[in-house]
Amino acid sequence: MGLLDQLGGLTGGNGGIGGALQEILGQSGGLDGLVAKFDQAGLGDLVKGWIATGPNPAVAPGQLEQVLGSSQIRDLAAKFGLPLDQLLGGLSGALPHAVDGMTPDGAIPAGGGNLNDALGGILGQILGKS
Image (cartoon, rainbow, N blue to C red; front, side, top):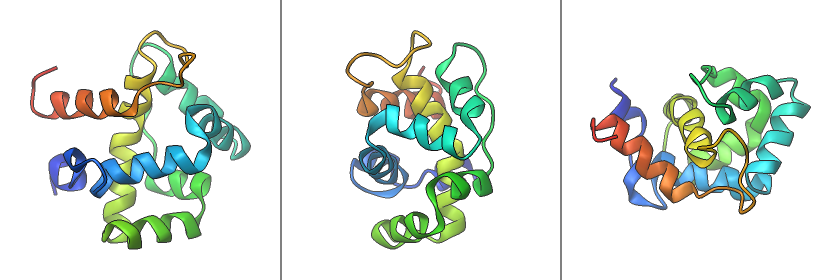
């Protein structure tokens, strides 16, 4: 399965992985809340690596499930009509890039970052239009 398949629905705004990313950020209390969740799960250095400039460390699907919780993952999969493994695989590929795109200067911006711009940047990278 290719990256585009894993990110199915990324450009749909409220569908697929893009919609799931929006839900995660909304339910977490924005980027600050997401960072706090990673910190609480003992994975703070991972998300801080996405915020910092430089390469983004990979996140395993199991690590995402650890941070977000099984019930949130099941709810997101049901809401967006995705199998659990496809949702987790897509999120593990997209979330580091989304957080990186929301923090272009290596820090969380005062407004918390713009997810739509970050999603557009991910799509540009996938299509080779960065």
